[in-house]
Length: 254
Figure 1 (tube, helix red, strand yellow):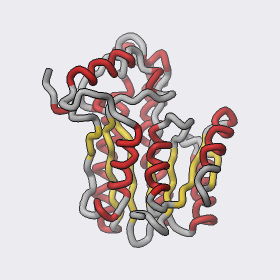
Figure 2: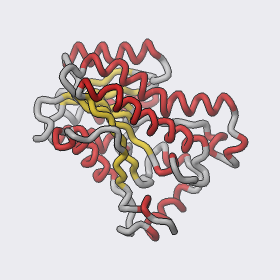
Figure 3: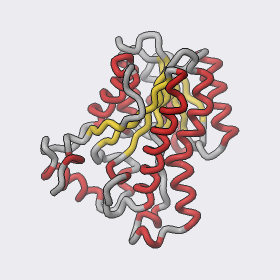
């Protein structure tokens, strides 16, 4: 029970296949009481039905591009929990047309949208989380290897993830004196609602199975347990880091 008596907010659960939900399962298993958001009526039923399987959880709407909705989400968390020990950011989005073809053809509006949702939202959420983390806490974001290597079809999302990872480091420096740690997990490709929108995703899975030092694809539960570690006191000396959970694929040159 590494997180017994602790609270967490997980932003970005869409369905049971979401990496965010695997994180929730790991944190809840070790005692954490969790809050969730959903964006729009289309996802509400799915998120609420999942949250009902975890005793004491709360669900509140929040579009991370809207400051008033972020404020309302954290007001609800404060009302229900009193404080927050962990914030997990599992949000990323780019327009389909900006993931197809060449990165060269990315639209200005598409670029701004991808960076806003996928990178700035971490900053916006952290701003509201910090006042609820008096005495310390953990902030965690999900990223991907496309932030530092060219992954065909990942395009503007690679730029957004690079910004996210830089943001992790700057937030870690800002929040270290408050005993708030900020880290990232770079997971191998996992079949989710979001990842299936990346052109050539099936081929990505195949390449990882063939070339990773441990020749298999990453399991969602492996990411969940890594998140548990980073959100727990076991990782109390770790901040500003990106932990790779990809069976070693990132170390390979060829």
